[in-house]
Length: 229
Image 1 (spheres, rainbow, N blue to C red):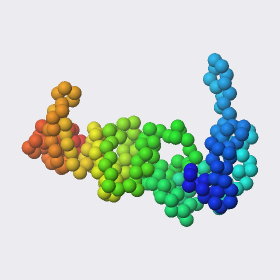
Image 2 (spheres, rainbow, N blue to C red):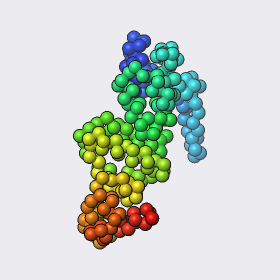
Image 3 (spheres, helix red, strand yellow):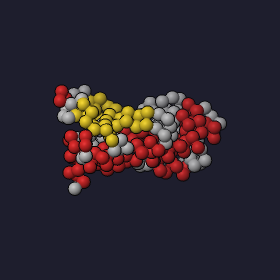
Image 4 (tube, helix red, strand yellow):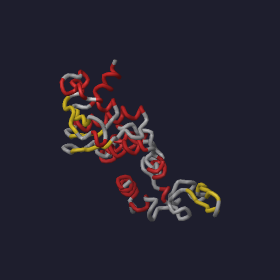
């Protein structure tokens, strides 16, 4: 949003705060929310679109300013994929958009509230913020929790991109697809809780599946071998 506000302000030679729905550019009727809430006491409240701004969140005078023919409200209604073509000449904005698109969120609009995203979408959005970094260590504690099966593949792609960029990714996970895709596995056991806490196996997924030596004691290895039959 900061980059978008600066771009609109520079293009139209006005103050950047005009293009914030939390500041001077906000519709005064709905306070930049785009909707009005009516409290019905003991009944569930009603939410209606603001009649003043029509849900666009900004004052009418702000919507006179445009960038490449679009108002700030039009821009916030763009999906990430659509915005890639609009901001192709602005590297700082383009880099952020590409990161979001790369994690499979090209359908999300620029102005979409975080509260409307699922748990899996928010996980991917957090990871998108890290894709351009290198030399970092990431520890992920069961990142597949709450994810749809189709999202697990996207998560794996992101992890591999982080590793390929020179980062170290440590994942605590039970999902077989994540375990199979690891470069190195440390299997704790032999069971859970008080009966666990011992390193049962260390090595590659291939060694674990082969079940030779210390891998023969691994319950994880038995499950992986069963799935691969």
